[in-house]
Image 1 (cartoon, rainbow, N blue to C red):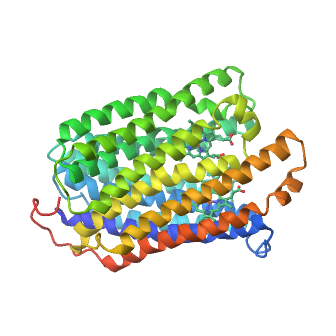
Image 2 (cartoon, rainbow, N blue to C red; image 1 turned 120 degrees about the vertical axis):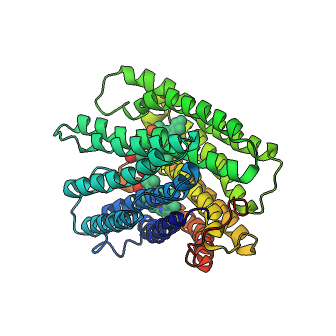
Image 3 (cartoon, rainbow, N blue to C red; image 1 turned 180 degrees about the horizontal axis):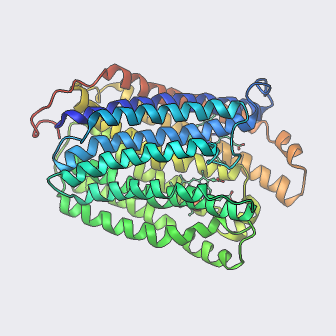
Length: 447
Ligand code: HEM
Ligand code: HEM
Ligand SMILES: [Fe+2]
């Protein structure tokens, strides 16, 4: 690594991997519950498992993004992080809030709003913690030697993500208004500002791994940011079809969200083209595999499978079914989980001085997790389409249909075992890398 303070990233990545493991445990609890084996119901009812599963997901992704920012910002701005000790405080507080929230879910202390279940008092602590994070990253860039496009897009992505947390805290007793604001957080995160974070991290990785000129890579980053905003902001309308908002959202939401896959397709073409163009053979091929894999799988999960249910004519049937879970899994996996795996795969050899990217386990981790997640998506898809036909087309009762489709969850759990094997191989290698050394190397040897 080039700056001592970059090693802070390691601890965020470690927290990220820990929370991911826990998320998977809750995934299995729900997988079995769907199969009819809801044996833990008295201790962990489905709603608590679900809230824990999705909130752990958001937490480990945020921890990964923060780790990425602590790694990238010193390098891009050419200086050490300001107040590095505060970064550890920020991590500690983040974990404390997260753990409290997750324990709370098991005692029915939650808000019951999908993805924003964290109770209000904890929301304020999240805000303070994120403000501290933004201050540390922003202050480092401000005092740094250069303002690179990559770093600025990353910073504004993170800052807007922090600001967009606030609409979810607007008090209202009206269910429609509550849903309306909730989507400002959930949709404008994953289909708006998180895409900026994604574009910036991909850009950083492509600059390091392909050897293509920074100017070329960053020019295309602007184009992708443009496409994202053009389609993603009004694309929010695809969540306003049937929640009590005016009818014009059917047209606006349908039209703009149908354009959203273009941004993801752009990202995939961007990464593949840069990798082909790059003359330099960076020894860490594995990091490049995760980088390209992320751009491709995000197109499949978010772009292609998002489009599959985004038109109101389709969504009227699929809304809130397992078709949504099918898309949710592959989109989150491709776009954001794989992104964090890519930056970890790139950063770990530099942080620890060990080069484990050539091991068979690394390749196993990539392929097994991806094949496993693709199979999980297919299982959710089959269960989802069966649910749509039985429940929405034929009008059978919800619970009766859930019973009918139990068998498909055997397929899901089997696929999930494969997926988990890949993930644990990745985590095993992460552990084998050991702690970061904190030794600053010559800039030319490790980039
Ligand atoms: C990386 C980007 C994306 C992620 C992580 C993601 C994830 C999700 C998740 C988790 C949900 C369920 C949300 C909830 O009910 O609270 C959802 C819903 C939805 N997504 Fe995405 N998505 C992404 C991109 C897209 C794109 C590009 C499209 C359209 C082309 C799309 C179309 C939809 C639609 C229509 C719904 C509503 C489903 C329903 O009515 O139940 N998504 N998405
Ligand atoms: C062993 C692995 C996993 C299993 C068995 C699993 C299983 C499940 C199940 C059964 C649900 C509830 C579906 C329902 O509402 O009925 C769920 C929800 C969800 N899971 Fe997983 N999951 C796993 C891993 C993951 C991973 C790695 C991610 C993200 C990359 C993820 C993202 C989600 C999301 C976003 C939802 C909410 C979907 C929606 O809004 O409809 N899961 N999961
Ligand atoms: Fe959306």
